[in-house]
Every structure is written in structure tokens, then in C-alpha cells.
Image 1 (cartoon, one colour):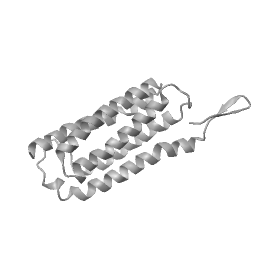
Image 2 (cartoon, helix red, strand yellow):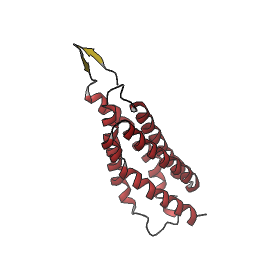
Image 3 (cartoon, helix red, strand yellow):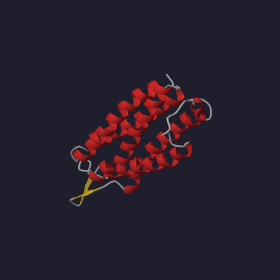
Image 4 (cartoon, helix red, strand yellow):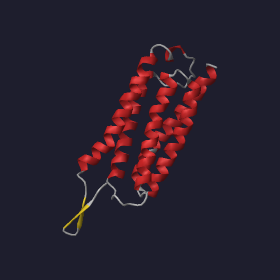
Length: 170
């Protein structure tokens, strides 16, 4: 975030700009992920053997909407840190890397119809989420780190589900 000196005090970028910087990437990943996923649900995904703990399809939309909203709020809070705040740059880098990996999972699992590729991507995604949480903490954004915990829990569950689907269909 750029700051400039006005009368001896640092002027912050308007909050609406930071809000856009936080929300737009999440919306792009959400829409792109949906575009890769939805066409495969009625066909390929419906034909897979799934474990008894597989949630109903209708649950995924609301859960991901909530998780993406929490991600955007977490990112907004990090964007609002002073530009020179220690760890801010790494926190934003980690955040954006995990977003790319989030989208990559949809491409691997659904678009490529590959539970094995999805499992490989989700393992890296979990590592990136842990890196993001750690980077948020180092930047002093404790609430942002806490906002990522439900996401970590859901992706860990998704990894188990992904692995089970791969095993059942191998």
C-alpha cells in the first residue's frame, strides 16, 4: 500500500481501494472455479463412487461462499496494514499463491476429471494455507489468520474426501 506524507502524517489509500484489492481476486477465483466445476457435477462427478461422509451437492455453494467471504475479509485487513509493515508483502504473496492453488484444484479434480491430480494439488494447497496463516501472524494480522482457520478445516476435510474418492475409483 502506498502512503504519502501530508502535513507530517501518513495518508492511507482509501479503504474502498483495499476492499477492491481484497474482493476482486476472490470473486475471480470463485467464478472461474465454478465454471470449471459445475459442468462436471451432473455427469462425471455424479458417476463417481463416493464415501458415506460425502456432503450433499447443495452444501458446497453456501460453504464456499462463506469461506471466500472470510478470505476476502482477511485479505482486506492485511491490505490495510501500513505499506512498510514487516511481513505484509509476504502475507499478501502467500494469500495470492493459495488462491491460485485453490483454482488449480478445481482445474485438476473437475476439469481434468482427475482425483489423483486433485489430491496432489490439495496437498500443496494445504501447505500454502498454512504458509498464509503463518505469514498473517508474522505480519501482526492475528484476526486475518484466525479467519483462515475454517478454510483450513474445510480444505483438510476436502483432502480426505478427495483421497477417498480417488481410492474408491481407482
